[in-house]
Every structure is written in C-alpha cells, then in structure tokens.
Amino acid sequence: MRVVITAGEASGDQLGAGLIHAIKARRPDAVFQGIAGPRMQAAGCESFYPMERLSVMGLFEAFGRFVEVIPMRRRLARRLIADPPDVLVGIDAPDFNLSLELMLKQAGIPTVHYVSPSVWAWRRYRLKKIARAVDRMLVLFPFERDFYQRLSIPVSFVGHPMADDIPMQTDRIAARRALGLPEEGECVALLPGSRVSEVRFLAEPLVQTAVWLEQRRPGLRFVTPLADAATRALFEAAISRYAAHLELHLVDGRARDAMAAADAVLAASGTATLEALLLKRPMVITYRTLPLTWFIGRRMLHVDHVGLPNLLAGTELVPELLQGEAVAERLGPALLQFLQSPEKVKALQRRFDEIHSSLKNDASAKAAKAVLEVAAGGTK
Image (cartoon, rainbow, N blue to C red; front, side):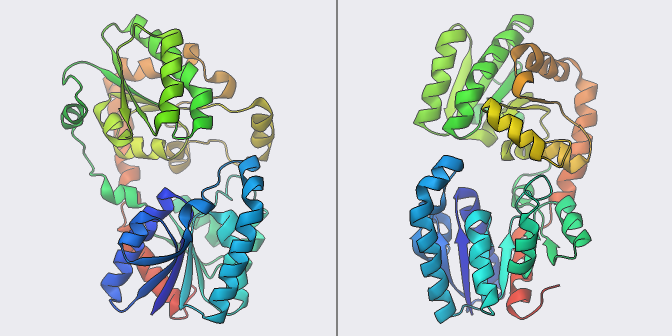
C-alpha cells in the first residue's frame, strides 16, 4: 500500500507523523511519500520536496512564492497521476493541497484533506472546490463536522491530537520548576504569537498590560515564550521601552510549559488559545494587525467569535479584545478578574474540562481509519 502525504508547516508535519504511525499499526506494509518535514521523515516518509517551500504566510509572501510553488505542484501532480498512490492525504495548507487534490481526484485517485480550512468563518467560496476535490474531509472540531454534514460533504470528526497529548490535569508547580520560576506567587503568561508580524503588533500592548497589572498586583510575575531570535528581539525592545523594571521571564519556545506555569494567560488568537484551554488556564484573547487588513477581514467573517475556546463553546467563555481594544486599559482588567475571582476560574475550568473531553478522541487512530476507508473505496 502506498500513501502520499503533503504537509506545509510544522503543525502539519506533526499531524502527518502521527498519522503515519497510526496507519503503520494497521497496515505494516504501507509505504509513505510526499512533502514531509523532519517528523514525518523520521516516521518513514520519503519527501519529494522540502516542506519549507510550502510554509508561506501572508499575501505578499504568497505572491513571492507563486512562481516556484505552482510549477512544483504541477510536477507533483503529473508524477502521481503517472504512478498513482492508493490515496493522497493533504494536511492543511489549503492553497496548495486543495488544487493538488482536485487534479488527482479528477484522475481517479482517492483524496483526503486533513484539517479543514476555516470556511465556516470566511472564504466560503472554497466549499465548491472542496466538494469537487475531496473524498473525505477530516476535521478536528465537532462544530466543523456539523458544518460539513449540513452541506452533504463527506466528513469525519477525528478529534484534536493536542487533546490526546495534554492530560486532563496539569501540574503548575512542576512547570514552574522546569522553567526555573518561583513555586510561590502569581504568574501571568504573555504569548504574543510565533510570527514576527504578530509580535511586531502585540509586543507593546502585552508589555504595557504587564506594567498595568504589576502596579495593581505587586509581586506579580510574568513569563513569555518566544519562538525565535527575531521575535525575542522585538519583545525585548518593547520591554526596554516600557518595562525595564519589570520581572519578566523570557524563554525560548516552551509555550506549553509557560502556560502550564501560569495562573492566567494573555494570548494572541490562534492555536495557543486552544492549548491554554486544554491546560485549563483562564485566558484573555487578543490580536492586532494593519488597520486595512482588519477592516477587510472583519467584513468577510461569518462568525461572532475568533478565539477557538469561544468557537468551541458557542458563546463567549473568555474575553476577546481585538485591534482597537488591544490596549492595557482593557486587557489588564480582563486578566485581573481571573486573578481576583477563584470561583469564576473554577467555573471556567469546568467548561474547559467538558470541551477537552469532547476533543479527546484518539485523533491519529481515527484519522488512519478514515484514510484507509477512502483508500479502500469508501467516502462516507
């Protein structure tokens, strides 16, 4: 059996590695090829192209790669049509994978897309292409399954691998020890995002929020995980401008440890907010971008919330303070309510427990089962 998997960034590489191991458990004879990162390659996947060539973020970056990526996709499609695999699995990267899936499905090759684009939130015109390109959509969240079922697009809810990895209860003291933080006292985790563009917009309001909180909660500590040297330099510059006196512990990576060590989290909208939910940490969600980008983006949205915890709950469980509201005078009080209200935090954590249980579904095994069904000719 031959499975081709195409992933475009680190998160997809991780999902792909889990999928490979789960398929091997069912089909030891399976061989794997595609576009793979280090985790997938370590799991036994031959990579036709470096995964980094698909790791494109932002409109202008995408235009810059257009000349390279489009011919690469065509070459890959010709290669796979000439030597068909049993199934193609495109992991996330919808701009690349949906077109590849469409070309292969039209040639009679079974296709699976793993991780739905946010078509329930915006760019719904993609749904017509999805319906033509994909034999099965594998989704991480229950509300996505319901969305696709209403449209009669074959779908399987597999759950979220992160919900399988993170235990229902996490040890705050152990996380503090791992980061070299004091075991006693309150701590807030500040997560400005993993990309330079995010940190450029959020470093200043997050640091100013830390100053606002410390003035009202003396002795409060802060921990900030930063993805790389570039994001660290931006955040350090904001500290030197606004909070040189502040006790703010910076760590390289280790976002999960930072959130586990904290009593509350202030995070850029994205996957980190789901991770905070699974760690059962109260949070405030924030985001900032260029005014024109914000203006256009808000008018394209079909949902009332942007944070994953609120989308999963179907209501505003935690505050979302975005764009013009992403200022210390709004962010600070929203975080302070959690530090001052243990009963509020306990009620929130009970809801987080319910959501965690709903996502804990042995995701890689469920995804492997669905992929093998499609490879064998089942699309429902």
